[in-house]
Image: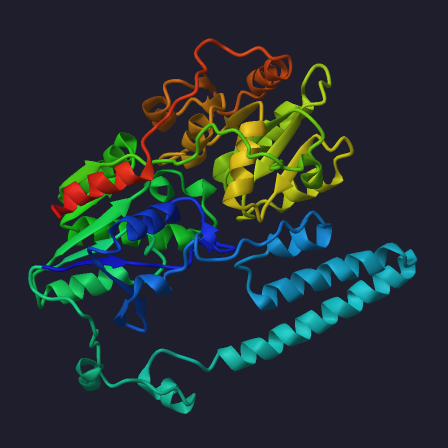
Length: 453
């Protein structure tokens, strides 16, 4: 029997693991002498050597590059936007800037001419589109190459793979954006092997309003449904995630696969800096006492509540809110606000190495996370492992995993503001205590037991 682990590179950021991709990298490191690795390219499962896997230990750390310019933040916020839409958006911005300096009569003339051009283009477009029909006759006249129904069965759906009967194929759940589970389903119809995968959360199903697009939600819904029908065993990162997935399977009429909860780990810990080793906080714009919040910039993280809470503090204690995370989606207004705010009491950082993050944890006064929903919240564990007091939104996952934290209602801005005020004055609730969780080697041991290696 051979155990195969799927490896991806889509969730690496400047050479080090981001978020849940740590699971894949830590397992690959712990199991490298005992399993084989594969990746998927163009419907082909290719075996890869461990040395080929991009690891934070194998990639030279990049030096911190300030990325606070408005131009950088604008383009970073457009990730995933089509080129044509971005050009149109830039054209609109340019037009609005030009119009500001023109007299009213010029503005009216430009807009009327632009309207006529758009109307003419719209008519031409309709002429081109209208002859196209679904029936064979119009398809022939339009020059569309259709596949005759008799030829559909001859399409080659061959999938090359190295698996054999009795093997175990493992995916750490980072495969939702491509067709791994679909391919596994097809291969399992030919040979008998065990498929184990991870479910981190079912947030797109129950909180679609915080996801980037409807199509993204649909793709993840399909992925969850396929996992429910194909997986032989599922690994969850919290009991709350297990309950949500079981509820989802029940709602769509699937029998939930067997599963086990294995909570995440952290190797961050309280440590004394080596002699001569200091982190120059000033180069990040940090000038004194600060609170951390860590995670991708996206609606689910609810950063606006923390930003508004900082702005609402009764007295300015000089406390800064430092947000560390990649630019995700629907954050253009947040980036613009932070860039223009005068007091510089809120800082957004990205391109941070693990070593820098570790030291930022240890120099902070507290970590605050106002997330609307979480599958786990790895930064909260990392912060507690580093000895940092944590203040978390009052949601089921946080209650389950971090009983040592102080809980605040998710959107209660005044309560978050009061907590910041108390932290600035050095006062902490008695319930807030450091917590040392499991290490990644212990996590790997639990997975090894699950795989019966």
